[in-house]
Image 1: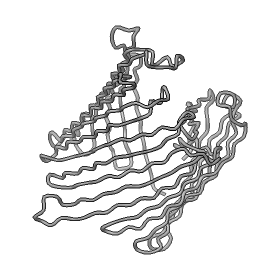
Image 2 (image 1 turned 30 degrees about the vertical axis):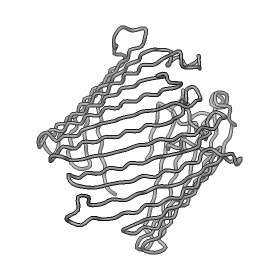
Image 3 (image 1 turned 180 degrees about the vertical axis):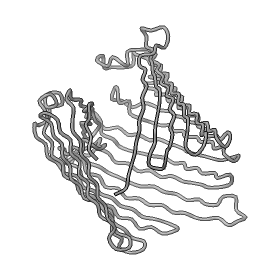
Image 4 (image 1 turned 90 degrees about the horizontal axis):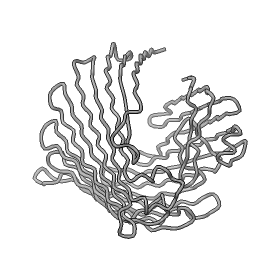
Length: 388
């Protein structure tokens, strides 16, 4: 694939987070991927990505694949090397070298049977590794993961058809040997009538952030069920101790996210999702966030579909509890934003599609009395693929 990109943005990763760099220049992009099967179950692949603009260049070459030692045991691997030339603006803004070169590799082992599986994985990413056409949001670390699961199966007369547990332990360091995180988690799961599936568990981790170590412990649960044909209900919740990343301290988090999917007819589908999140510090509410996601779809026939999406977010904050004065976004006691999108698609054949759409969005902060639209777009797209 080759392309010209008028918005040259890419991630600037670290071992505790990432930022985004944006250049004023257009960039040229090339991506090549090749993969082949070897024997009955093995495979090997090669990936090359290249992106360049004036005074900027990022090139990555990667080899990956899988190898089966037996019917139950397999190895997966990936080795990558990247070289980057940075423009002066990026060098100054992010305090990095003019030229960077880094590597990354991961090696995994899995033993899988019907009743249980065991896994192990090791990953190593150097500080100067950059995958500007991918999503490599973390570098300068090495990590080991050990885990597994056990599953039991019920008989026809049993209420639950399947149940078990899974968990893992992982530990990561930076390239100088300093501990970044140690985590252990254990979860149980159940499957039963009406396509019920649920998992629940607890996670404990020791995490290094902003030159300090924090102990986080959280409990969580996810469940989904189909009480009627075409109707699925889902729920996720989480609570416990979590880092307040804006102010470098521990807080108490509570999240809950119910959602519903309903095939209202042969042509219409409705999806509604709601996310609620709150974080308390020192027994005071730092923020409360509410988010709604509504998606409506109508399929006229096998070729044409109409989709409508509404997203709305409402956040209330206590600015007095935020320590960083330079963070302008968190000085508002309340911020709201919305976006809508209407898209019509027509499929001429399985490889040829046409899209026509409209989208808009808006926001509100302490300086505005109500939501104001600040963007509006009409777009179209035509895609055609052919086989060689």
